[in-house]
Image 1 (cartoon, rainbow, N blue to C red):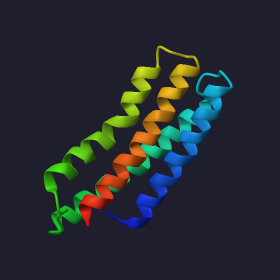
Image 2: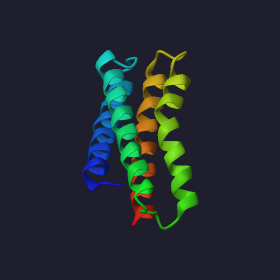
Image 3: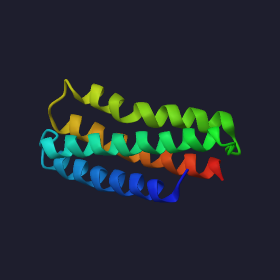
Length: 117
């Protein structure tokens, strides 16, 4: 894990989470730019897992390998799962589901960083 990518994911999840809550309070479906931001966040998370894969191939290992593997899978599935859940619900609730997915991804990211040390 690299601290720069951890910070990038945390910043993006925070910004998108707040944006999603504001849009949900305003009773709006997810804006197009918000969805594009989610795509960017997913790409950063995928990039981080590529770096993790490289570091694993070099012999670096997290303290809790099983927990780290579970968190890695969850980090890959969180945003696509949120998008799938919100796809049929083009109201404030669909937007809120995406905001919550961002918050959960931030927590998963923090747990991944903690288990890597």
